[in-house]
Amino acid sequence: MTTTRRQQILDTAATLFAERGFHGVSVHDIGGACGISGPALYKHFAGKDDILTQSLTAISEQLLAEGRRRATAAADGDAGLDALIAWHIDFALGHRAFIVIQEREWTNLDAAGRKRVRTLQLAYVDIWVDAVRRLRDDLDPTETRAVVQATFGLLNSTPHSARISESAMRRRLATMARSALLA
Image (tube, rainbow, N blue to C red; front, side, top):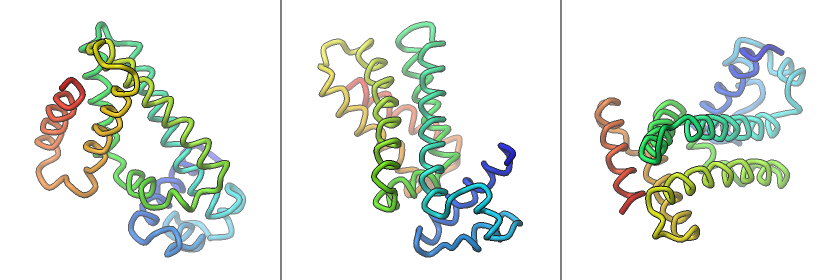
C-alpha cells in the first residue's frame, strides 16, 4: 500500500470515528469514504480495531518525531518552547479528529495498542518537560510534567473551543500556552 493510500484510510477513519464514534462506523463505511470496498481494507489492516490503533500510533509517532526535531533545532530555550507550542497548535488545529478519537475511543484500543500509544505520548511529554525546565529550573520534574499535561488539555480543547478565526485562535493559544507553562 502506498503511503498516500494508508494515510488516506487513517485520516478518513479518524474523521468518521470522531463524527460517529468507533462503534458507529463499519469497515464498509471507511472503505466507501475512501473510494474502495470495505473488504479491500483487509489487504492493508487486520480490521477496524487495527485502523484505530494505527491511527493513534501514527499520529503519536508524528508528534514525537516533529517535537524532537523542533526542540533539537532551536537556538535557545525560548525558541525551543515556542517551536513546540507552534507545532502542537498546528497539530491541534489541523488534526481535530485525532484529538477527539484519542479522548473518546481510548478504551477501544487493545492493551498492546494502549501501551504503544502511551509510551509515545510520554516520550513527547518528556520533550516538553525538558524545554520548560530549561526556562524554569525551579520546577521539579513532577511539577513540570503536571504543568505540561495541563497545557496539553488547553491546547487539545480546540475541537470544542475553536470558535474564532484560525489565525486568532493560533495567537490566543500560543499566548495562553506560554503563560501557563512558565507561570
